[in-house]
Image (cartoon, rainbow, N blue to C red; front, side):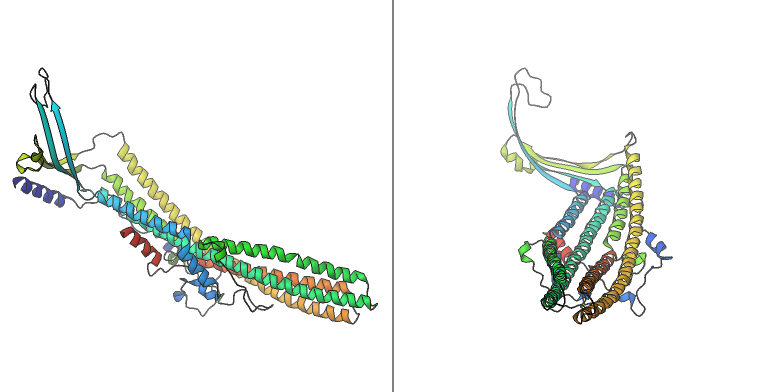
Length: 496
């Protein structure tokens, strides 16, 4: 009992000494806030909207496409890349558990059997007398505990906590990128469907023009040249269909890859109602609130991850500093041993040893100093990377917003040009029917109208892609006010 009282006293003393943590405490960087004081977006949303309530959690629902939301939800639940990102969260939490284990005592059981034999003339300092044989049975436990007096292990655990944070943010960043990529592919599919409808409408018009040209030639009001021209235009438009069908199939296959499913499982039905005035996506395509860099901290996972990287690097400075100070360990051994097997469970055959020990670094050829300086350098690198990430984030938002604005202006001009081309085509066809114009003017007008309409479709697709880029640049696609259910699933897997 005296030994246990002594051990309790030692533990009480070392616990009283522990609690000091060396190294700098982490303070969140204020670079984004400082940048936000002078930040003014080049392109701002129209007045009347409440920017504070601009929720980007499920921005794709604004597009009001019947296929988009189910595709994105399926991708978020089935993506193999997201599954790998979730496993990285589990791995980070397990590494944290490994680091935290060093804060607690370690207890090992041990058992052994040893047969010794000493010759008649042998001199054995640790064995039996000369000319004897001996069995030795032993069963016991060995305990060891490094008392974290200076917080070295605590800093390692702090760094591991930060690493969990940027594993979570990596998952969220992958989610943001995945949702945007699915939207881009569906926008392309819608654009190809609209282009196909345009080409098919042109084929119908070309067929009508060819019939008119042949009828006029048969009636003696024209010649075969007009009919040949009409047939050429018709076949040129028909030749566009295989390319459109191939591009659409490739886009659907890419969707299947993003969803992590068999390509045959993904089917995107064309929209049933489509005409010259129907937009590719009929929902809200207004410019969302851009905010300021300080607000991006709460929405962009890459910025949140960069801040966590700074925190992890900062904690490792304290862990390196802890190596400068003495290390105090508490160790103990309880062994039951003797020449008979029963001695391994006999309390009277015990050997008990317990007590503290310490080590003090005296000379290490600069290893500790260099480790501290290395940790400080890595913290500065992480801070510079954070600042660069903020600058890149602001540039991405500005570029996406500006390009969306310019693509919108281009789209307005093309719509005006398409209206003019439609009127030109009607006038040319009417004049041709009464013989006031040749057939070449009709085919040229039709070709120009279809070419402008296809440009308009491409401009609309580009604008929608830019809007998608803007939502991704703003960090849209996850809920900043609650844990993602799939991250919680990673928690459950970790607990299991």
